[in-house]
Length: 548
Image (cartoon, rainbow, N blue to C red; front, side):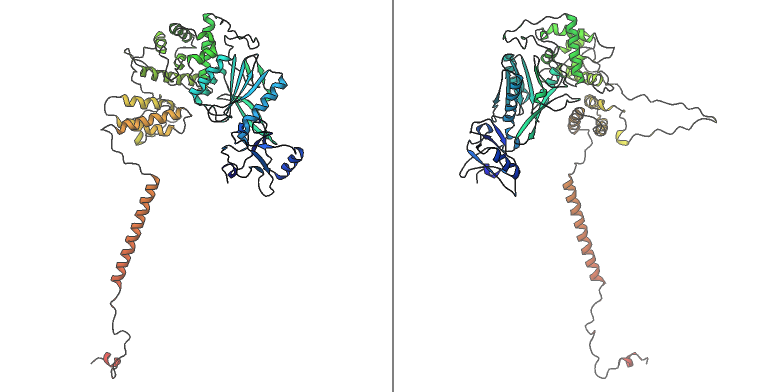
């Protein structure tokens, strides 16, 4: 039996080996019988666009098991995907072609092989408007996606990405949230022998309903799904319907307009808990920001920070990152210009910006929460020692008739948490880091902080939980490498603990068995060899018992 015949083949193409008309064979015997009567002349093939061998298939009807396609005898095929979803790229190509015909769009849908097969992606191009929509099936690394997006945008006015299940990298999702405000998704629903595409738009907080392709529209700004609120601003390229192919001159806005647009983009990024690059900000706030030099960027960001809602507001410039997820180097100049100090090293800048980003997520996120305190910088650009963040005890004074009220004693802290302030969950990670930087032997303080961190893990959401776990791992390594850390007993796995317990139980049973055996031997009387023997002739035992 060949490899392909050892699995159920559910999809094929109709007509020839190179056809793009896909079909899912009905699995029920009665449904397949009706299908045969309606289409008596159809021939089925293991199509090359399915990644198949190109040989003809036969439809097998069974009453006692699932109906399926089968290769003819002595056929060799190495097709790996044979399930109902293996022809989804052909179904979406057919749906897009029919949709463009109903909309009277001069467009073309084509399959893309990105290295693993013809079903990696489907491209939909509107020729006159130079618009491009890519339906991505295979998951791409963020660098691959950024490279592909750069190539597509050079030849198109608008580019929209629609991702299948599990096809979007988290970093790609963040960048698209920054640019558009949402991410486009697709899935399929089976209707008889075909599958139909459904689309929706989603963001970190909500999603629209799944709608068919006919409910969507191709606008000058790109593909639109009902219920989605786009944030993308039109770029400096030609109008979508012009078809001239010439790049228009970008419109220069006033300084006030640029400041307002940049602040709106940064607040939106904080609301979605993302950290954009300057290029992503420019795609959201206006492409005329791309041409700004570093001094102009610093001046614009300083103007944004001076429009803050009040003293102590988060520094929105700290959200800007590079492609390597580090803070942009010029953010340090912004920090100094607004009077927050001058970071001495890149490590100090990264730590300071991370705390400030957490504060922005807390203030502008939905729902909002209490922001952690801002990190202070010393005159030489170092992080100042953290002050105690123990909350002030609130006392309630109760006046009663008849005298004083006896106050109950405060509940003592557990022994393993002694000396540790009552930190908020979001501040424990920073406290662990500062504990490693303190001078002198402080392993017990760090161990107590680790105990508090263990308790906070159950209350923290992602990604704060992941960041706290990473900080706990680093702190444990730091403790293990210190000579003044008390030696910890090595942790024993469950399997080893069960094996040791079983071995101890078996030894106890064997010891008890041996002890009982020895006691039994001691308690037995010596056997009398004359027991049960007959008395000698003439011997009267009664006479022997008479007293003389």
